Amino acid sequence: MSAAVIPLSNPKGGKKLCELCHKPAYLQCTKCRVTYYCDTAHQEADWLSIHNRVCQMLRPVRTPAPFHTLQAERDQHRAQMRKAQEQLICMSEEEARRWLFEGRCQEALPAARFCLRIAMETHGPNAVQLVPAYLLLAEANVGLGSLALAEEYLCQAEWTVLKTPGCSGALRQRLHRNLGSLHTHTGHLDTALQHYANDVYYASQEYGLDSIITCGGYFLMASVFQKQNKIDIVKSLYKKVADSWHAHLSKLMEKRMKLSVHQTLSEVQRCEGDRTLTALLEEQEKMNTSPAPNTHRDFSPAQLLHCLAMLWSLAGSWTKALQFGRRALEEIQRVEDHELTSPIQELLTWIETQPNTHTHTPAITH
Image (cartoon, rainbow, N blue to C red; front, side, top):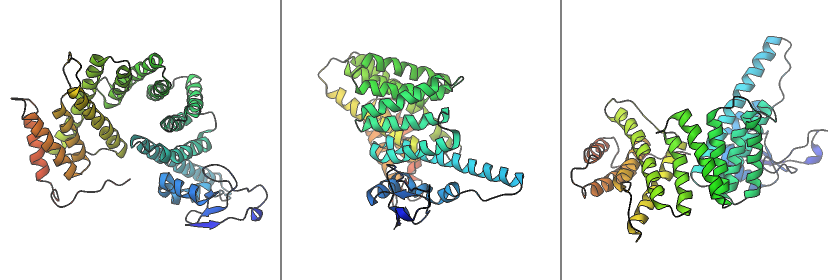
């Protein structure tokens, strides 16, 4: 998988640097032969995070362009390289986001750094297209407790957005969400709430008030209000999040079950849904055992279990879908004439009819 690199044998001006730390490299990936590392630890970390997915795509991108005598050939080659670079940016961004949703911030770093490097090579050092990579790096460093480094990335992202007229609301939404997260971790809760409010504002403009993207801002606001011990607000926001996810997943399942339209979730959406809904379920259980007075209608545990059953059904993981579906049915039977009883029973019946429901749970590949 790797071969030794002898620095003295490099041509003049052709110094090889480690993909992760940019120190002198002594190892070369033997598959693509255009990626270098200072040691095996960095090579293994990069392979796990992103390199295993992009290895074979890097050789044409990082190999010097062939000489073309015709302008048409040169233009065609540039267009092909640009397309390949854009694909690498999308793939590395998706991988970094997936690692982050799984809570594996260390694994997200190489993918986020690679995303930034390719974006710089493609769009230049000051382009707004670099902002998503800055935000990924900031989020990973917040998760690792490197708040000063996260702040540097966020400052760069914020400055780039401010000096870019017509920057999209979607990008502004992501910026404010990351700023809110940083201020939450540094204890500036009122400032964090302001950023989360902007997050919700831009998300609602781009995706709608009931979008699962918008409700991600509500979920984060609730975590801040919980730190401020404003439990009624927390419950209200959590219910909003649960309702949004339930409506979203119900629409997808209806198309899948009744209209035979194959609906799937991306790996990032699955990770986000699993993390959010599981966290809500845990919080609901804590609130049920809390001695504090209940002055607000709780969000339903049966609704959350139903969401998780639908989520894993869409992911094709039948064992998990059955487990959550049966738990949802047990929970809902404690409440007479509840509107969720029929949808949960229909989902369980549908899952039972799926091939390999009892014998095999399809793996979700990373």
